[in-house]
Length: 251
Image (tube, rainbow, N blue to C red):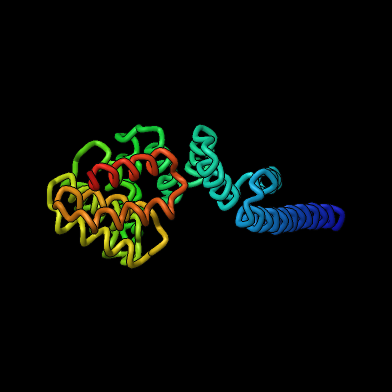
C-alpha cells in the first residue's frame, strides 16, 4: 500500500516538475522574444530596416505566438512595399486572435496600396466594430471610400476619425481632397489649412490647397503654396506638375 502511494506521489511530482518547466520555458521565450522585438523597433527607428527585419524574424522563431512581433514585421513589410508578406503576417495574427483590430487595420491599409478597396473597406469595417474608439479604423475606411469616389461616405468616416484624434493630419488632408472633389472649395481650403497648421512641413496639403486656389483664381496664394510644396517635397513627378502650374498661372 505504501509503495502504491509513493508511486502516486512520484507521478504527481513529475507532472508538477514538467508543468513548471514548461511554464518557465514559455516565460523565458516570451522575454527573449520581446527583447528581439525591442531591438527591431530601435533599428527600424534608425532606418536599419534589414537588421530590424532580422530581429523580428528571430522573435517569431523563439515565440511563434508573439502578436507584437508579427505586428512590427507586418508594418515593416508594408513600409518597404512587400505587401504579400505584410498580409501573411496579418493573417498569422488573425489566426491567433480573429478579432485583432491591429491586424485588420494593417491589412486594410495594405489592401489600399494594392487598390483592393472592397477588401480594405471590409477589414476596416471590422476594425470599427472591434475598436470603435480607434481613429485609424475610420480613417482607413474613409480613405478607401475616397479612392472609389464615394466622397460623402469618406467625409463621414474621416470626420469621425478627426473627432477621435483631432491632430490626425492625414485625415484633414484626405477630407480636404473629398471636399475639393465635391466643389466645396471653402471647406477644402479650411481642411488643408488645418493640416498645415498641425504639420507645417507636411508637403501634400500645400499642393492640394494650391490646386483649390487655382480654381478660385487666387493666383498669388496658389503660387505661394506650390512654391512651398516644391521646397518640401521629394516627389519628383509632382514637383514638375507644381512648376507647370506656376508657369501656367504666370502666363
